[in-house]
Image 1 (cartoon, rainbow, N blue to C red):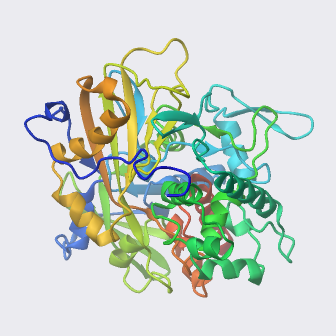
Image 2: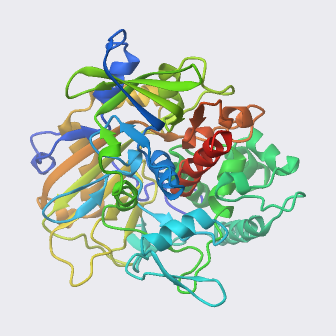
Length: 528
């Protein structure tokens, strides 16, 4: 291994509880994203049920993830209040849900948003409405509410038995490795400033603002790893870091995502603020659940939870949705002038066979998230405890300290949110692996690494809950984001409109929020 010994900081995974591992045997449970309800649709167990009642509205939104909630906010802003949002889970948010215990609120999925590009007017408007942006300077730069900006220290890496500041490895590296680090950072600065022949940024968020320059778009046809090989980035620590970044945003390493997507991770965000740097993020103890709950707060009875859409059709110029109420076990028919389908493609294929757009199938990587409650805070040598804490060489993505944003003196007890994309197997194999795991197995997987890097926490863990995301997020495999069929996949088919990050291939808040706004704009242009 270039620059670092082969034994460096490798997590212990796949171990099982033995008689000597009683510290792994802690209370807790396995949770999930309403998978049992969703599989009713997959398995056809509720097909053929006749509607018990019919209601009507102007617009029906299927799915209350960020895209669906954004669409609802856009309809509200346009004064089109005659809409319904149906969501199969018991709370809105999609992969931006969160939880809470006596110690802290905590995320179960997405947990931050970078500061906004000031040209992204809908997102900046949302941030202003929520008080995240509290003012705007005379020069147009927003002033962020400082309690929402991620507090220092923000990130650290466990490597060579100690903690370093930042995730890009620097401890124990040869000069050649450090030189490649510097070259890569400089190249990403160049890409961030690059403009295509059409005058648009090479990479941008939302994706619709990115350049359509054929030379730039051609990067979507090859893997990020292939591009790195071509450019001579051979440093093992650097390649680990780039794999980590791809797994963090896309759930898969550099050899599984397109070069365009890999560069997009580093070059698309150009947020500016009066009191924050371009790399700063906003976050909350519960992560992006804060934003999801804020978007859903004004929906009241228009948000129908526990309602599983089972069939979508268009007839007589109307959208017709049949939905199974998981509480009453009856089917409700909703007739609307238009429907916005804010659901992933594998769900859409069951709801409306033949409606899903062409092109390669969507690849969703399973994720597992553990929230670990301990009676003591993590310690360790080197850089102090940070918001995000990562282990070099690990299959896991490290942990976030849930109460990092809490004002005042930190309490002794803490909740650590540990992330793990199951990217070392094919998605189907990973889902089967996850289905076989008991709560004790998950405890062994997560606590093995936690105790390796924090032996002081052995015996101090009080509870470990696990959330299994069977279909996680979309992975931008080569050819998906910008392939020949990508535009057709996103095109509306009135009275049906689409809003989900599966349409574009990049599953981040800014993109999801934008797609909800675009769907409503398309819907209103069709029949205002």
